[in-house]
Image (cartoon, rainbow, N blue to C red; front, side, top):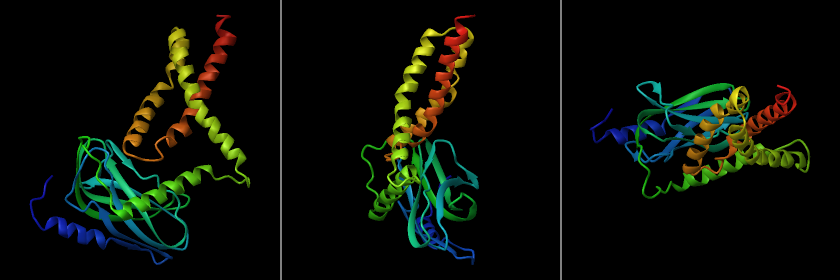
Length: 258
């Protein structure tokens, strides 16, 4: 899809600036601007940022998704983590990026409650494409995009470490165990893959169906410049590690008797 009208980028910017949602129940959301503007061509993993102004009586979350001809483009997509923003008047940010060569004609910003109940959505006509090539030099985002993105990453990291205990001891201990599970899983996976045979080896290789895509996603997030690139790895790897520990234990108990 392409557009050759010289006024299209201007029209898209004006329409994006007026994207607005108001429910009459203490919720008002407006898209103020985008970075880059409509008509831009981005390299692989370069984000398209949307600046959002909101007024709400309750906490909100915002998530962006790219569409082409009414169909969501999910292949190679990455998006913001959508932390919970506090009630009142404020600004937030949503972003979308693609690994592959993709062209979109609109962005939809989904508005959620703190508990992830969908409240509303905004549709922003926006012609932006990704060429799938790694940029030679990273494009400097607008000042508002840089500041709001840094604030969002700080909010997300803080939400991960929040705990009901005053000193956060148990949260720190839990995160440390989650982090140590990553090398533990790798060692267990290599050991079982090399030493086990037959059904035991098949059982030991099952986590790879999840971990290989997860490692690819983590690498993509790292290359995209996200400060939260290890987040999914921290959440999922402990389960894979515990599973392999169970396989090792079962093999030690029943394998020798077989």
